[in-house]
Amino acid sequence: MIAHEFGHHIQNLLGTSSRVQQQMARSSRAQGNALSVRLELQADCYAGVWGAMNRARLDPGDIEEGMTAANAIGDDTLQREAQGRVVPDSFTHGSSADRMQWLKHGLDTGDPAQCDTFTGPI
Image (cartoon, rainbow, N blue to C red; front, side):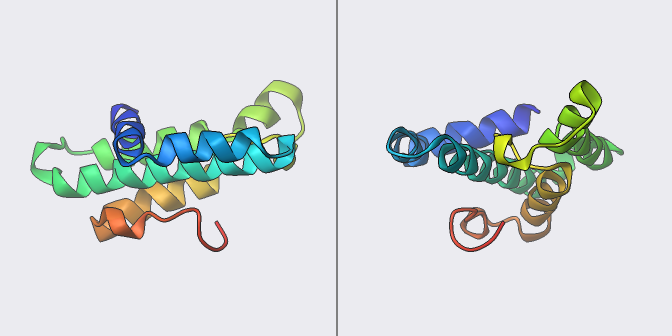
């Protein structure tokens, strides 16, 4: 979770957050939600990059714990638990599968340049 927030800090430093906020202001609710998902998934990827670059600082099980957390806080999982149904157009953080995929992608590549969630399909 802390590494994810670190990812948001990187987005702020790079100006990504402000550009996305500007795009969201000009978008429909569904389009804004989709942009929010891409921003959050990028932060998950950056969290993975941090983990890859700091493996010596990680305790055994930290990566598995991160993947478990990413799975638990996916919009689909949270919606299913809270309301018994999933509404993908209302996602603001991404599905559990997408969150785990981007965290793992960052861990596997260790390269922040590989965290472009805004180009192509998620």
